[in-house]
Amino acid sequence: MTHLRAAHPGGTAGVNRVINKDLETEVSGLYICDCSAFPDTPGKPPVLTIIALAKYLAKKMTV
Image 1: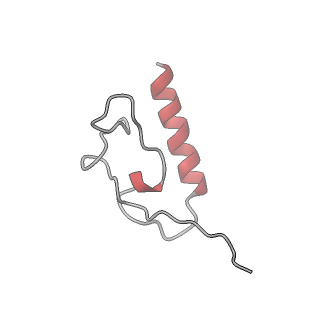
Image 2: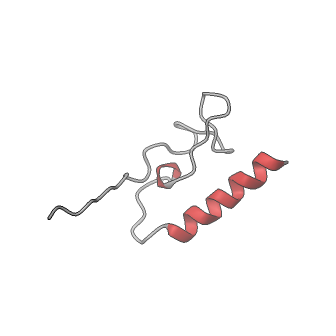
């Protein structure tokens, strides 16, 4: 039996490299809000940090 696995390395789309401080890419209206926005790969499970990042982005988008 093969177990399904998926992963995306963190830190691959960092601020001021791929996204701006508002998490938006060069494509207007396209945002990144996952581990790839982190400066580097986190050492611990990043779930709570991703939730906080999503809340930050949601607040920016509704203002």
